Image 1 (cartoon, one colour):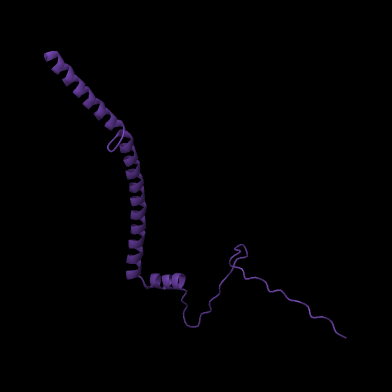
Image 2: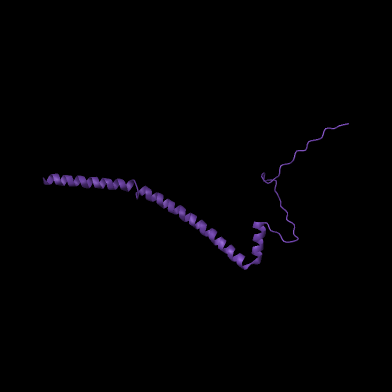
Length: 114
């Protein structure tokens, strides 16, 4: 009788150990899952660092705009296309940019009548 209980107990413990080992290698919290989560954390940290740099540059820009009238004027000219009174605005279109060049109109010759 004691042998049967011991055998049953070892069988249940063996099955429980097997289930725990399977969960360790497959499923939530498994080794592959932890590796995937660590990779996601690394990617998110990289994105956070990039956003922190953008934030730092924007903060420098805000400080510059709040203290310097020339910086405000530079932004108005470059981003809004503003010009001062009496200035002439010239737009240069490079021929290397196919979208920027206007199509050349086709001119048809009139028939020669005598």
